[in-house]
Length: 277
Image 1 (tube, rainbow, N blue to C red):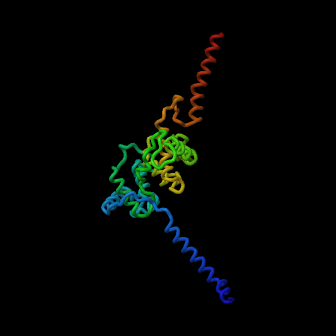
Image 2: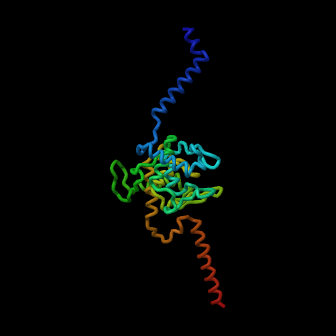
Image 3: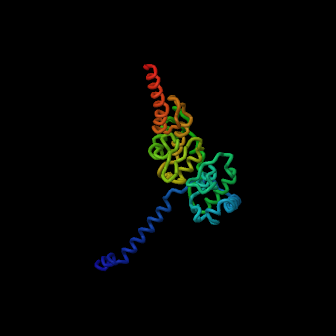
């Protein structure tokens, strides 16, 4: 009995116990951790085509192995979603050494959908990362009192819940209506008006520029769909109050009052003064 107790107190027993605990914890995490969804299998030819496009258009900044250089970050592990977002919105290839990459008009995007998919497949082959979302989660929920299959809430309630999620997590940068806003050091949160649902979803899971990453543990795919649907509902709603003034809130409204309201008051004062004279 004393010999057994002595072995338990031996320093090597503590180290062995820690090692076993680490192995068990690591194995359990590897087995139970959620895996990134892979929307579809891609062929070797698609990956090869993507690599050729990458070497011709992206390697000068991101390196021939996409491991990054002084001019661009590593792309290993960013996933297909990041490539589809950055290239599909025209932010990449970067037009110039700007503080922030800007979204381009559709006619200025350098690559077609097939080429973008090939580059995304190549980058995805370098390391696990967020994949291009399934259309199930990028389909906009249409306003109404009906309930979709498998949902306990009506469409209107789901859109309203998306608005709550957006205001808690996104409105401090993108504005309550997604109109965008200024950030520090010359950066800005872009307007979300006119952005496709797929690119909104990809931005949430990839975290471009100064934006944080909202993975499925932070915001579920269903909740991301509700956020997207809220923003599209804001885009499509009729403003019964008149001019939106860019939906920029009290700044634009205050400027309107100062420029037009105060000018009108001064004009009235001058007119009354002349009339009294």
